[in-house]
Amino acid sequence: MDVSEAHDPSLLILSQPREGILQVTMNRPSRLNAMTAELVTGLHEVLDEVSVNRDIRVVVLTGAGRGFCAGLDLGGYGDAPGSNGAGQMERSFAT
Image (cartoon, rainbow, N blue to C red; front, side):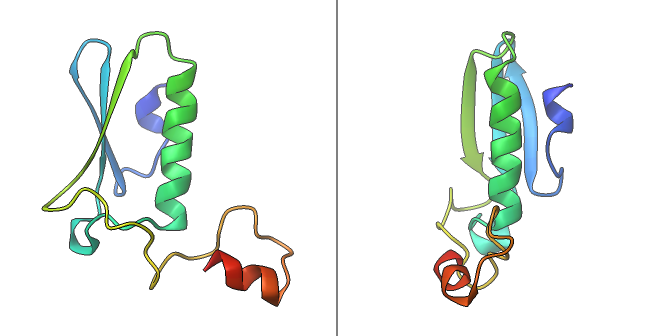
């Protein structure tokens, strides 16, 4: 699979500025690239794909807009990956 197919293109922008270099840009500039469950999942997918791609030697992680990443999006994180079947107490820790 081509590494560019492993993500939601609206959240992550992938480019190769030079041979062997992959630039991953988090694309939520209106929220200072704050992390949501979907963004974290997309990053995991891209990095998992890169880990077995011998053509990529360097990954540059950056953020669109004026901020790199404000951290976790507390107002809109969504369901944490792997929280299926968790009770109310466990779900409260994921948000």
